[in-house]
Length: 95
Image (tube, rainbow, N blue to C red; front, side, top):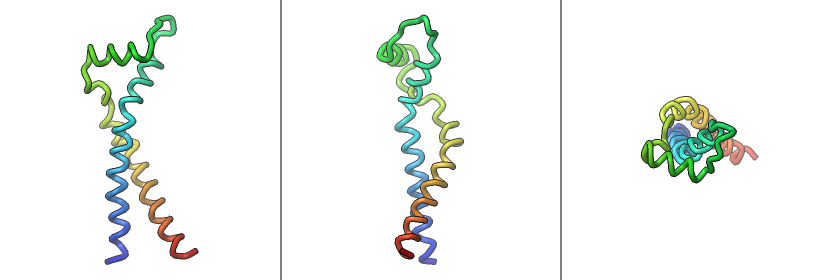
C-alpha cells in the first residue's frame, strides 16, 4: 500500500501540472493562431490583434478552445509526467 502512494501523488501532481501548463499557454496560443489566420495582405501587428481581441470579444477570448485542448492534450501530458517521475524514482533506487 505504501508503494502505491508515490505513484498516486505523481498522478495527482501530473493532472494539476498538465492543466496548469495548458491554461498558462492558452492566451499565447490564441494570439499565435490569430496571427497565422490573418490575411496576408492585411497589415495588422500582434499588439493590434490583442487589442482588438480584448475590445471585441473580451478577456475570456484568450481562453477559447481551452476545454477541448485539455481533453485532447491533457491525458498525454499526465501520462508523460507520471511515467517520467515513476521512472526517475525507479532509476534512482536501482543505479
